[in-house]
Length: 145
Length: 136
Image (cartoon, rainbow over all chains, first blue to last red; front, side, top):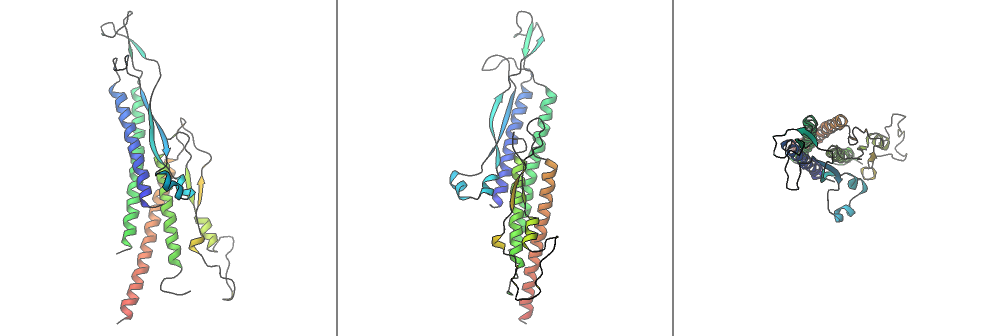
């Protein structure tokens, strides 16, 4: 176990949070989207986080139990939310149905903003672990002076 | 055994290792803060280390005679306890890591690490002074 472990874990967290932010901004951008390549209105997406070992199976076998237990994180998938569409009365809309209702994605802007703040703070926490590990690294290097 | 480097240097090296491992454990917790079902891990060594050093608060072992069995600290035989928190705090099914706790642990850990490095540095500086001044 070395310094690079802390940096790699931090990096895995940063990259996972960035993916999360991408998905959140995709949701916010598509808040009124009624047409998608798959057909129908846009469906809200969310990410699934999964803890992941940091290295190849070989190095994993060579390491101690403790080192195997310390894990990074990754986004294991982007899942489509199956919540029902919001039906809004708008007869002038080109995608309105016979009764004049339009199906819009049920995206709650407040919910997305709250998720965005969480992603931001988690990103910051991971950045803090990296800078902390860097401080320790530089300090250890001072021993060799 | 008196030599160029006292036994404390092994102890300091060991503690630095432990602190580094703790940093890794905390980084892992923080990265997995939103992973569903993840349980926070922690690394505990201070109390065991105190015990291993024979300086436990419940009564320390003193050698009253140099012929007694030495209870000297052996850095190679010491290791930390790795603890998985079995009771995660579940908020909306995913928040099993206490952010405040982890950040504090990390800050404390970094400060203590840096302090230890500084004392090691001073130790080496002292040795150097003895060597250079003694040669004059």
